[in-house]
Image 1 (cartoon, rainbow, N blue to C red):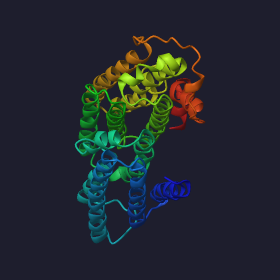
Image 2 (cartoon, helix red, strand yellow):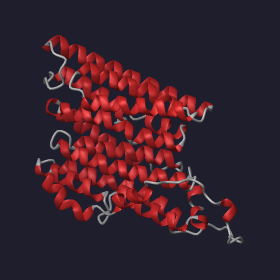
Image 3 (cartoon, rainbow, N blue to C red):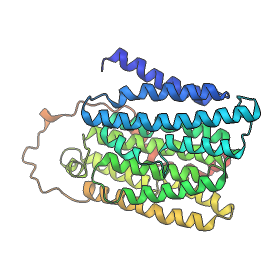
Length: 347
């Protein structure tokens, strides 16, 4: 793709999300979603092949269905209240319609089937945008309508998403599919706390985005898309293998790392609201996610691939990719836990 075209398309994607974030008028929110969706499709089809075309078509059909459902909810809300404003609390029917539409856009279970397929069919860079930037707009709308959302519907979808995200990734060898299932599980955690403390959802989203960006950048740097290709990185990038180990454990939510903060706070918030069984179930399901992250770290950093490294000078295979934001992303993804008291004070 030519740089001027890429700049125009990327700026449309960004502008669409910013419109959703800053609007309090339902029509402008809907237009923002549409701009964002139509501009992301050329980015998904950057490397033009049948697989990318199929992935883009799946994405387009799912997102248009969600947009239609959202528009239906908006029109019903307009007929009942006579207002376009988002601050007007809609009734239960419109609220449920909008929640389901946004769940489809986010890829929450039971509307999750498109996420692994689309992520697997597109390049790593497009997958990175799909699993990070594309989550911001729907979650911001959920944040704004959170007081009127049905908690039972949201909690059901959250538990199902955490379960699907855990079970789905167990048997995968493709890194993009593993990250897609990881995304479904993380979305489940975010949605679980939305009705009780929406600010925690934003904190979880920020930490999730930094961890996922760091992971995708490490995979792009080592040009790995499968567990097998990842297991060979120790030979050429010994430092990257140890970084992948840390970021993977952080994604799994192990205590000394940043990924533990949102899980700790969400479990705390749920137990405070007498949802002890739900919190326990989600914490147990998080172990499934931790298992497949551990499997990746075992394949990458804890085993030596049976290939001999005869040539020690690998100057002709030097990687020319530059990842400017990788060091700060790694630091944020792994070392934020000591700042938790400050975060609690802000919340």
